[in-house]
Length: 238
Ligand SMILES: [Fe+2]
Ligand SMILES: [Fe+2]
Image (cartoon, rainbow, N blue to C red; front, side, top):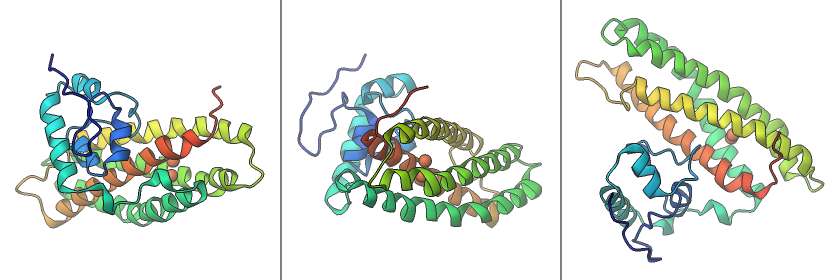
C-alpha cells in the first residue's frame, strides 16, 4: 500500500486523510482532477482521498501530486468560498449559477442527442444510451429544480422555518441527488468519458462538449447542496 504523505496545513499540500468533499470545497481546482479520475466528490464525497484512490485502484501519490499542481496553478484566492455565504445568499448563488444554467442548457441538448444518435448510432451504439440517459437526466432534474425553487428553498429561507418539514424534504432531495449522480456516471461511461472519435461531425463534438460541461456543472451544484447547504439543517431519516 502506498505510504501516506505527511499531513500539513500549508495551502499547497493535499492531506489524503481529508475527505474528497472537503478537498473540493477548499480547493476549487480539485474538482477537475477528481472528475478526470472519476472520484465522486459529489454524492459519495464523505470518504478520505486515500480511501477513494484505493477504491478506484489509483496511485495515491500520483493523484496527490496532481492535486498539488492543480491547486498551485489556480490559487483559491480568486474564488468565492461558498461556505462563507449566508444561507439565503448561498441559495441565490445555487439558483442563479446552477439552476438557470441547467434550464438553458438541458432543452436544446435533447434534440441534439437525438440527431447525433440518428445519424451516427450505426457507428457507435453507445449513442443510443447517451440519448436515453440524457432524457432520464432531464426528466429527473427538471422537477427536482422546480421542487427546490418552489418549496424547499423558500422554506429554508423563511424566518419562521420548519426544521421538521425541511428535514423530511432533505431526505427526498438527497435520494434524487444520488439518482442524478448515478445517471452522470452512466453518461460518463456511455460517452467514454466524453472522448470524441476522429470521424465525429460538428454536432457530435458539440454534444459531447456540452455534456462534459453539464456534468461538471451538475457535480459542482449537487456538491454545494449536499456538503454546504444541507448540513446547515437537521435531516430527518425515515
Ligand atoms: Fe439544486
Ligand atoms: Fe438538488
